[in-house]
Image (tube, helix red, strand yellow):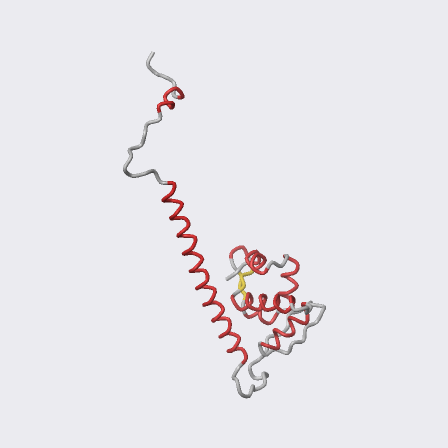
Length: 166
């Protein structure tokens, strides 16, 4: 589950931009949200995936309303996005979604694509983690004192410590 600050950091939207996009994706957010400690809004993976898809569509020269409409259509929604944003788009009933010939349910395809993306990112993070671990171990070996030489006592350190015997 992600907080609003996590989503801001991940998607690089400002706070107001993120709120507007979540309002446009009301059907997805409504199904994928819950309240956390101190009544904070916690959002799940499907909301994050929808926001990432929205970012891709916006980079492809679409506006936020158009991008939200495309995302809701991909997930089997109506794609009607209003500029008022006063109310969230109602979730789509499975009875009302049309049957999709040849290819199955597009929601399943989207979820499969998200799972593949997640697995790819996990492997990428594992490779990156191994790289940083190797770098840290190399630096550790370089900075460690040689094991064959004993530590030398710092003779100059004695003048810093006041003498107690007088």
